[in-house]
Amino acid sequence: MKDLSVIIVNYNVSYFLEQCLLSVRKAVQGLQAEVFVVDNNSVDGSVEMVRRRFPEVVLLANKENLGFSKANNQAIRQAQGKYVLLLNPDTVVEEDTFRKCFQFMEEHPGAGALGVKMMDGAGKFLPESKRGLPTPWVAFAKVFGLAALFPTSSLFNHYHLGHLSHDEVHQVDILAGAFMFMRAKTLAKVGLLDEGFFMYGEDIDLSYRIKEGGYEVYYFPHTRIIHYKGESTRKTSANYVFMFYRAMMIFAEKHFSGRQAKLYSVLIRLAIYLRAAMALVSRVFQWLFPVLLDGLCLAVGVWLGVQVVAHPVPLEFNGKWGLYFAVWLGTAFFSGAYDQPPHLYRLVRGMLWGSILLMAFSSAGTIAGSANKRHILVAVLVGLVGMSLWRFVWHYWQFGHWRFGEPKAKRIAVVGSSQEIKRAAELLRQVGAQKPGAHLEPQHTPADLRQIREVIQIHKINELIFCGKDLTVSQIIEWMVQIHNRAVEFKILPENSAYIIGSSSKNARGDYYALHIEVNLLNPYHRRNKIILNSLVSVLLLVLSPVLVWRVKGKKQFFRNCLGNLFGLYQWVGLKETATDETRPAVLSPVDKVSQQPIHLTAARQIEMLYAKDYTPSADLLILVRNLSNLGRKV
Image (cartoon, rainbow, N blue to C red):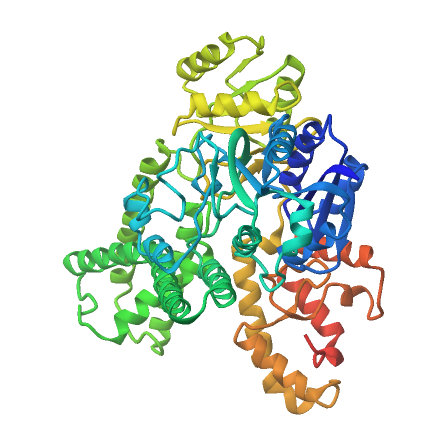
């Protein structure tokens, strides 16, 4: 029997996984350990990376996304360790983390599971390191914001046990699934993760069953880990809300009964509708706000045009002005004026195209009717000035400079050996990032921290990169905690890695520097055009269906595909072998351009990656023309 089995479930976070495994490789020293990576059909090269860089890891490569519970259970059933650790791939562990956890569990035979102090990528304590049981009252206090208003209250913030010191050992109810150090005998008694939970809630359920099984669950703060994403990276998305609270419903139905279960059910349903509504309103507002500001600028331009143009278009509230504004703002939208990062030329291009269309319609006297073209010209020019001004002001407020389109200037310092500093600078140069403005070679003395602070102050550093080859994780975490400054972001360059990884907070998705490859299919402009193309092709196919239907195999499915593409449920051509959970079902794939016969999976993925990288609408049209008879294929 081994001392420890470390299990990591991965899904499309190769850059995080690499850094996590590097820290695990150091942390298992001194223990008889085995490390499992269960990959849930990632398409980002995770499997190849693990095979190449970590041959000692037991790799289980699934052909579909099985979810967190099933994937962990796969490895647990093969594990031979006295203890089992479930570890997220977006974590970095200290060199002594496993040994300290092992020793604590050995000294506490009644302990069934243990969690540690988790820090976010900015060096801030994560409250989900210790949690209470989400009873109806606890859930109510959290859902309706009482926990946030009274973070240290045992009554209102029992969810995060805010009344307990995060620097002392405590018995707790619930551990976070990002780090669950458990006794194998405990799992054998209480059972593995409940596979009814696809994502979220399985850690609560397992912790609860461990407690019910007569074991103690501990929060152990004498070692720390970095957890880049915290509780979630998409808390404002309706999808997260429904998935999380659905997991809470499963938990309540499983463990509560009678009046308590009914009350919990009502609270959770109320929370779902409330949070989903808030998420929807927030996203709609964020999307509409710049459009409304642009509309206001155009309205000022229209009003000014009345003052300076002879025989202007009357300022009447009718459908004509509604059409003008719809055309202007619509062409701006499809030109990419609201895409990130912002570029003024997209706005100018869209407004000019809108004005050309309006003038053309005006000359034809059809849709827009006769209109004063000078009035339209004044409105769009004044509108453009206003749109540009508010964008510049907003950009300055957000980034502190007037160079529109450029993000906040990075003032970077690198901490490490001269060799690793050069490697970091070269990587930053290759990806087009800012050149480091300062560097520091640590002497591994208490003076290092003081010097780092001086470098930050003198050079006004807002991003600090630590070289993982030269520094221990314990040093990096300690410096992050000591330096902790909202104006400074931290990143780590792992040993022999092409990524520089970091995250500014628990609610921000982890980011990284890497060689940039432009993928056209992910560009919002191309994605929008693809949706429009699918709809237009569907209309054309429906019009021509009396002729085409005789050539198509699967005639009923053909009409279903046309309607599905028309309303955006399907896509005519899309990724299949490299699809993710968010990918819409596709009738055809890029492979159909090459062959209609099955080909090797590796070749199919390479074809799809090239298609995504170099995507143009003409590529879809070519595949469609070559596969007219297959348009009735099931998605």
